[in-house]
Amino acid sequence: MIKALNIDKLRFDMGDYVLSLQAVSVRVGGRERLRCVDLDVKRGAFAALVGSAGAGKSLTLACIAGARRAARGRVRYFGYEIRSFARERIARLGIVGTQSEPQPFGTMSVLDTVVVGALLRHPRIGKARARARDVLALTGLTERAMLPFAALGDVDRKRLEVARALATDPQVLLLDDIAAGLDRAGIDALTTLLARARTTGLTVVAAARTLDRIPGRPDAVSAIEGGRTVELPAAAPADVRA
Image (cartoon, rainbow, N blue to C red; front, top):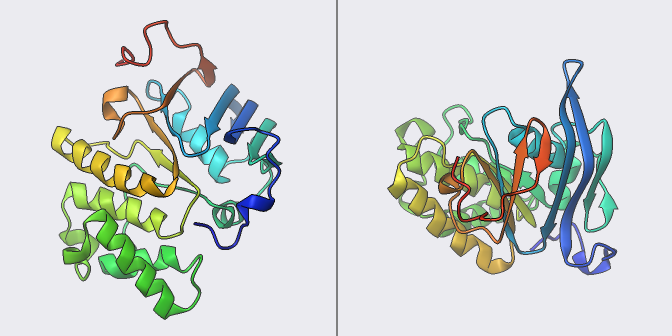
C-alpha cells in the first residue's frame, strides 16, 4: 500500500498496534488544550474518538498528523516516535487526514484535486493521474471528474475530501468530523465508501461528537473530554450518543 515505507522492516514492539499516544499534552496560545490523551489503535481497525465540542478531538488528530506538536508525551507509529516530525514527513510515512469542511484548490477539477494527493507517491504526472482515476472510481466520483468543487453537492464534497486523502496511499486515515452537515443518507454513503476503502487493510481513526455521526461501525471507541481521554461507561460503545 505504501511504496515509500517498507512496513515489514519496521519494529513491531507495539504488537498489533499501529498508533499509540501516551500522556500527550498540547499547548495552544500558551494554554494547555490537551492534558493527558492516551489512545491505542490496532492495525486495520476502525477506531472512533467521541467527545463534545472543544473536547480536543480535532487537536488530537492534528497532533497525530503533525499539524500540531505535542508538548509532552509520546506519539508512536509502528513503534517509532513521530512526535517531532513535520506534517509532510508524517504524510509520507502514511498518516493523512481530512477536514470537516472541505477546502477547494481554487477552480481545479475533481480529477486534478485528487491528482494533487496522488503526487505524494507518484511524482510522474501520468502515474499520478492514473492513480487519481482509480481513487475516483473507488469513491464514486468518476462521472464528476471534470467538475469544479463549486459544482458538487455536500456529499460529493465529502467524497472528494476522502478521495484526496486516499490518493496518497495511506496506512492510517484520520477523519475529523467528516460527516458534519450530512443527513443520514449522506452518512450512509460515506459508510459504504469507507467500507470499500478498508478492504485493503486501511486503518481509520474517526472523530465526531457522537457515535451516530461516525460513518461506519467502529471496532473500538475512545472518549475525550476537557483535553483528557476518559473511561467509557459500561454500556459503551453502543450507548455513546451524546
